[in-house]
Image 1 (cartoon, rainbow, N blue to C red):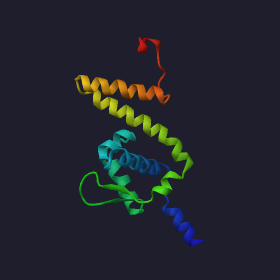
Image 2: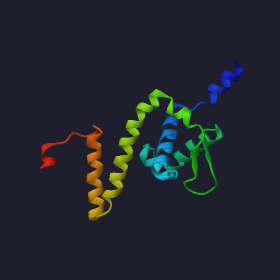
Image 3: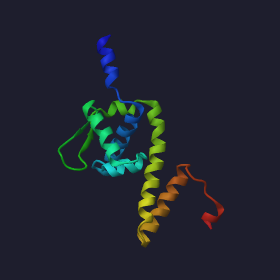
Image 4: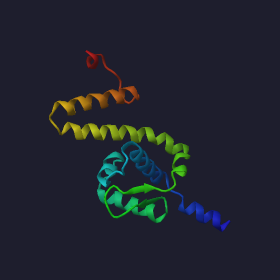
Length: 140
């Protein structure tokens, strides 16, 4: 029974699961880990130091590791635990939406045709995913 209590004590919290899931998906999509600033934007944290605290906690709990001391070297250790928590799977929709919106905000800082095309593509993705309604004025 003590071992069971100890195991429960190191299980990630819901917010930690959200962070682990974001990192895991980011690595799958990009082939490398997210920066702390990307995590901050995607998960609506207020500062990079908040991200660092959460990352350090997940490392100390054994859910994450840094392959080395370089940037973008985060690695999720127990992916199976992340993918099996249903309430976290529901939150992936919110994470996806925030990631897309953060990318749009970054692109809006640029003033070129490629950025505008990428913004339109991402806005279409939001519509396809059901995050935004397609208005008649938008399609004209």
